[in-house]
Length: 170
Image 1: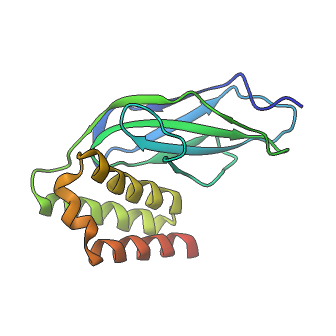
Image 2: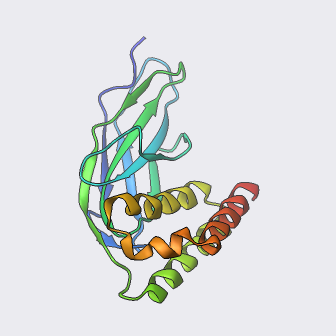
């Protein structure tokens, strides 16, 4: 049996503002002998895609995924999975830097709270996981250095858990 092949994936838009720009990573023209296909979408900070360290969405039948990210440079990739379980990882897509949402810690905290609340309300567990992961990945690259205190706080961890639980339960 033939593993998924022949398709492509891309990101839109190519850059934006942290926490407010909604990115869409979409895959098309994939085929395989064992249908239907599922897609899992991953993001990783930096210009190279590290599939083992990426934050992956749960597999879905829809070939696109919408998400928001923290400030920094990001790369995306997709796992295309056929009904027999064969997996093909797409070529990764690098895109432009996501610029900061505000100059102050209060601006960043307010923007993060607003986005997390909205994602939780919509039941978007994948979105909550990707956003939380993008904040955490920023720590190792230095792009999120000014948010270290925010994310290391118990309040941030509790907000993330509450939003994730709300998204999963609804």
